[in-house]
Length: 250
Image (tube, helix red, strand yellow):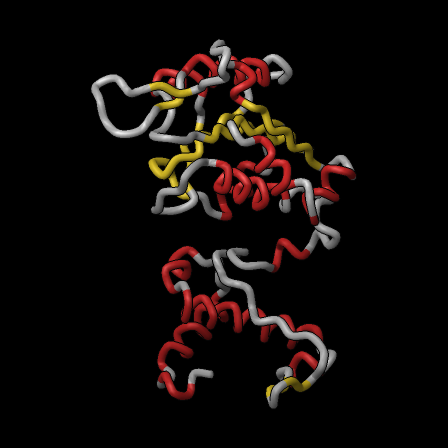
């Protein structure tokens, strides 16, 4: 089980986003827990103000150190040891599936969501263990990136998915994108399901799916192939496929 705690000034946003569907059921079953802590509850300001003007001038406001620190300490006091604290920031390293797997091994994860022009650097130096970004763009706050990361990490926790094997065969497994999927009917809009999937020959189906993953990765995310986990036969398949003229590749 992993306990996810989100330090935020918009706790309802977190709960509404993560208390439904698969993650909602995972919480009910006790596989994960998600708690949103309102940083405003820890400010000393009677109007629940948590921000102020930045020293040195500049546009916007900066979240103050005191309420953020006190909110964090309230969480830390309930943990057996100092938890891993993730500050959601475009200045951090980019989140990916390998990092999701790494984080899924933790028992406690705390996500700190900034707003305005950021958070007082002094409290970040005091409590943050990881600076993580979900991409090279700027959002209005850290809540959406935090939910993205929690979703990606939580689905790797045993029991969260109905079919625990399914996570092993999705995009980015072995650094490959997922193969194309099909369902009933056999023919739709003049397009048929590939014959191999109707054959009932499981070994051939798995071989086809693996090759389709390699092809799809080459076409859509060739950068991933550099670190893809391919067998010698699969590497040979890839090299032969690359030699085909573009008009006959598929």
